Length: 326
Image: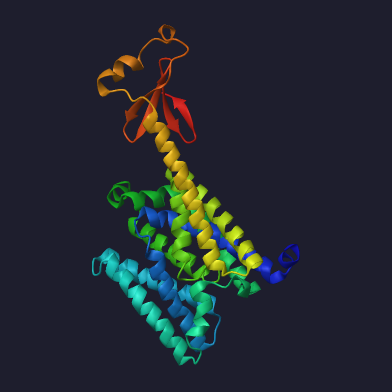
């Protein structure tokens, strides 16, 4: 196994996988927040048109796919924001037109659909050094923008009208999100392929949201999950000679199932805790500490979308992975 990892093409595959594992959930967090989980699929199909165009013009597929995918994403966002076409219609155009165009162009190039298979399902072992430089550079820029502009991008994804009242450039930020999504999809062609890239953008985000509290914590954890499943899936695919994209996605699903069990356990603990009625909240919340026995069990009190606990006359609220006193 160690001997296999010493080969340069395997090392390039691991680096590319880790970069995609960090990139996809970082951008996917905003896509999921906007309830556009299938956007990755639509952009993936138009990236196929870019690959077909590269085959027809005998140029490098990855740069052409990036340009075509970004152009398609910008067009769809302009149509959506102008009201001339709904987001669903735009995604349908990406699905059918992009995929059909890519197959047509590949046929005209005399390469057939077999030339597209490595981009549809991913082929990490074919990542070249130039591909790796391009993926590394653009992935670094996109992840940095996702983290540095997190407050502004989250505000736009959560509530456009509120973001507009705060003076944020809503149109520009929306355009930035779809451009980052297009870059993410096209840069992940070699890693998981266009048919599975949306899964890597969504599943780690869903798994992280089962555990983390708050958007930023969830995004950071989803990036960690993405890196873990991409690295582990790549190693497993090399060791067992399985398709890299499918192995990575199945490992991501396993992470999600484990996180779902964590959520069920957390809910059971909260449900089993004694919950005080609305009528007695104020009375118990202000009981002097000296009048309460040290053996008192904490009392759960529903407070908005979370649960506070009153213990020894002090009220505590959840904050991340611990409780702070009110």
